[in-house]
Length: 91
Image 1 (cartoon, one colour):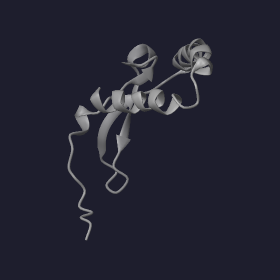
Image 2 (cartoon, helix red, strand yellow; image 1 turned 120 degrees about the vertical axis):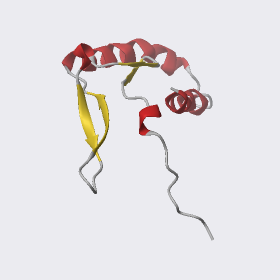
Image 3 (cartoon, one colour; image 1 turned 45 degrees about the horizontal axis):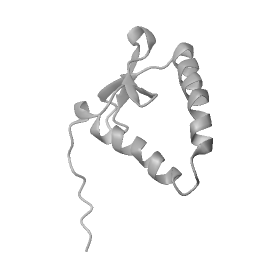
Image 4 (cartoon, one colour; image 1 turned 90 degrees about the horizontal axis):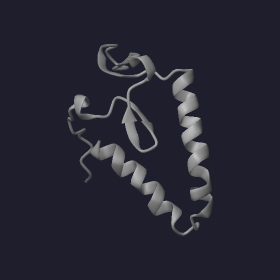
């Protein structure tokens, strides 16, 4: 039988910024907003509150990365995209 007991973790150890260009960055101006436990309504963390400037930074980064992504073979893309997930976990 599979154990479905959730494992506790430290929310403060999770990244709370914006992942832009492979780096975790705060929102422009340092804006944040609370993330609440849906059961209790209690705040559990604060995360970056992206604004227009942040969105334009993300767009510019994506546009800049697109030629390299387009040149990446379909066979290689999963391993390249997988690196994003591992950077999230280790951040």
